[in-house]
Image (cartoon, rainbow, N blue to C red):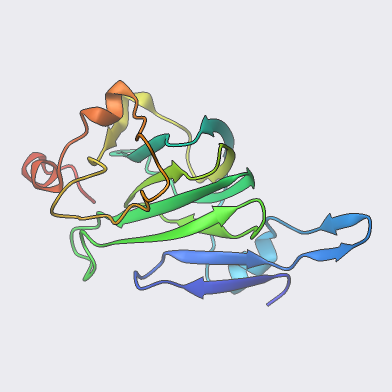
Length: 188
C-alpha cells in the first residue's frame, strides 16, 4: 500500500505505521501522512488539529483521554525517543483494559495510530524528545480525563532501566485507576 506499512497490534484498531523513507547523501524524504494510503488501509479518519510537545528524559505524559469529543491520534517523534502506550478503554472490546506499546524515535520514524476509546501516554527515553500528533477532534479541557500510569490492574511495563526518575504533572499524579473509571462509568 503506497508509502506506508500498517502493522496490526494485538489490539484491534491500534496500528504501528511505518513510512517508506527515501534517503541519499543529502538526507531523506518521507510522507508522514497520506489520506489515500490510510483510507486504503481502513483508517478513514479526518484530522483537525496537530500538536507538538518537547519533554526531557523521564517525563511521562499520560494516560490521557477525553470523555466526550474523543480523539484518535496519529503520533510520532521528530527528535529523540519515547515509549508510547495505548490502553483499550472500550467497554465492549475483547481487549478492554489491555495495553500495547512501541518505541517511537526520530531514527526509526515509526508512528502509532491510537483510535478513539483509548487512553494514551508516553515516557521519554532520550535526553529530550519532540513529540508530534495529529488529532481527529479538538482538545476539550472540560472533558479531559485519564488513567493512572501505574495502575496495577492494567500493569503497563514501562521501560525504566535507564530512567532515574519519572517526572509527572500534578494532574497525572492524580489520575484514576481502571476500577475507579469503571465505577464512574466514563468509559467508552
